[in-house]
Image 1 (tube, rainbow over the protein chains, first blue to last red):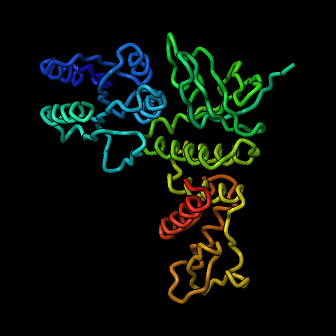
Image 2 (image 1 turned 90 degrees about the vertical axis):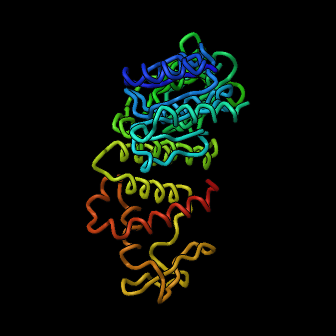
Image 3 (image 1 turned 120 degrees about the horizontal axis):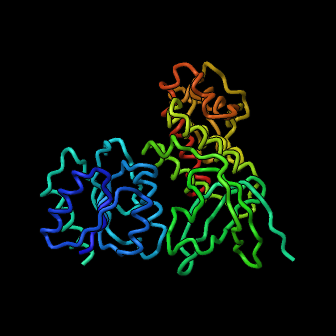
Length: 122
Length: 231
């Protein structure tokens, strides 16, 4: 599967990319919303993993923009974020597959979320 | 011969249109709600919102179209609400307001809707103003410009609302009804009135003990918007 990873933290990104590649996925990592939109055009991702706390335009803005393109409306988006997800209400119209709080999410849980997203799209 | 015109606008939504164009739905200060094609912005380098900043006020030069769609000639940023973008809750709230405004307005709306939305975004941009105050302000002013603000002076029987009475709200008649065990009192109604007369959301920060009453009044205003606009 082609995964677009939107992660501004370099160290975390390196870990995620390694783990996801070991599972056989193709990963493209970017660190901003604008780069994500540009690369999504090129990559045509099957799944998006998104940190909400991004520089310049945040993850919510990216999601609204991403979903405004008809070919990207059904692509699963997994939010994996440092933001306090208990305090954020994310509209169901944005089609978030899974909402993960990074400090409490293991790599295994992230992989499980990816596998679930794959099973749903299959 | 069609002449281009210049207007101020806030983007409400955008969709793709063909391979390289985007259609933006924009609410403007003096030209109603427009659907504008931004040509060639999709490829080779897609820009967020087709080059027009989201959550901002832009000066737009527009060429009227023959059909439903006009064409964007150029845009210039007037006001960017950076503090909204820096806060996820404020971003989410802003998009909800844009969605509500888009869903509830037809094309031929006057400039008051633009003023209400701009006022709300300005309120959300001020980090010292709690989000719920701005939401309340938006709901009340949105109801007012759309002609759906309930009577906040008299009750369902035409009597002046009294400070010593309790009231319930009658959604069928869009008015308060005196009721001994009613959950709305003078302070709730006063807050509703203050939200109506406040020129900007930040004015509501001056209200004392607002936290005691805001939730109920905000819930009422949200229900009224939902009921009257199916949003």
